[in-house]
Length: 70
Image 1 (cartoon, rainbow, N blue to C red):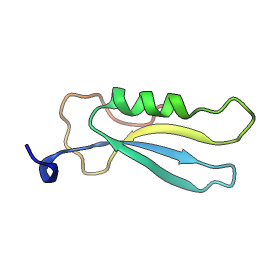
Image 2: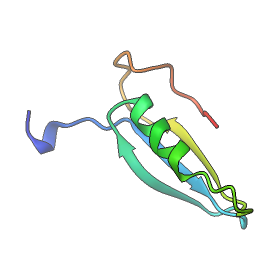
Image 3: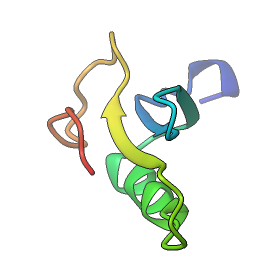
Image 4: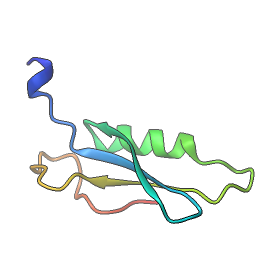
């Protein structure tokens, strides 16, 4: 497998306190994406949300059911 065939169907999304959404990164597994999202949570009062979602058009490959996770 080379870099052009790697599938990264899991996204970490950040929403700031103004409602703007940004893709933080793409990951091969839901567990990997969730680990990153969990590590970005800031307990110092910043109003940013992080969650994991499956990229649209990504084929199901047994790494979870997709959807949103907080």
